[in-house]
Image (tube, rainbow, N blue to C red):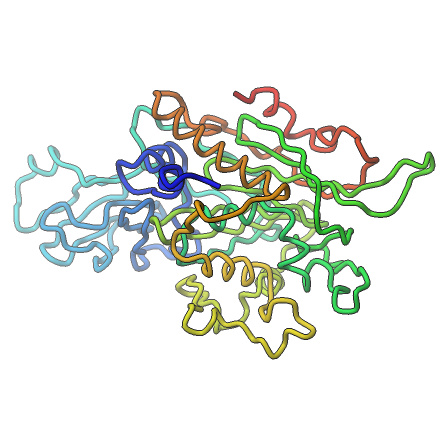
Length: 431
């Protein structure tokens, strides 16, 4: 349970808030590459950390991220024309390059003015099917962070964005909570629950697939330079040749400020819960496999986003609301655990059901919530570090591509870190 003051600290992301200042020290996803795929295509209006921005791709394929309101008279650049290597405001024709350089001012033909002024623009990178930007102080700009999915060809990865009307922390806490996987996602994780016999889903692309029916995993947690990682131990009822219990160990890294990596049998799900503002989140699910081509339609089905009642692939909006009990079909619940279908469908509905910002002063935590507790503590640690003039946790780590998330069977009591060797160097560097 958090105090009311702590709950405010870890959920409010706008300009000038302690968490908002901390989040601005990272490279942040602003949209998918697909959303602005075409050169000179329509500008995209985006919201990030309580600010309204415009993302666009110019005639040369370069990407710009600018403040939405034209610096001249405040008209929205979302209405603008993208042409001839710039974004032109409709109101008076002022035209801006991707870096904010003023290219033309038709109603003020003074070249000196254009050289003295510049539109507010932000640094941009494009990698892994995602467009990234940095909103923090120029002198604190960190190196661009590399993740594992960025290194693979397009055929071996896909990116799905889902906009959810809930605070980012509700969604991220779900990602830190291993015990919910086998309960909330029963149909995807252990479909034998209907007949009260354990049956693994067996889908190699499904990150919810479990190999144990243990609903109360034991957690080991270790702080790292990127945040922390944990091992969720589940009993299997099996023994090795020496008579030692064999347990399933699910290792998950949690990366500041809002990222997790989830293992599936043949792939990884790197998930970013990006705060658009206090009450809206853009979830980016980046799926990659070093050995298999990624079927995007199959991923969409696993997530439950192939149902048009729940998801609009054009706007990326998650659509259901409390007025329709979030789309739940109770008639199906005799053989369907939730009356919903798919991992993201179930996760998003749970977060939405908590309200826009959950009141954590009213909850009652248990041992299974230890990773959620650690997540909140690391966020508070991060806010304190930045407030005292230090670097944000993990922000200066340029290469996170070797991080490991894994589901592996180990002898009970084994050193689980040895199964996640890509994480070891970051554990030794933890503050």
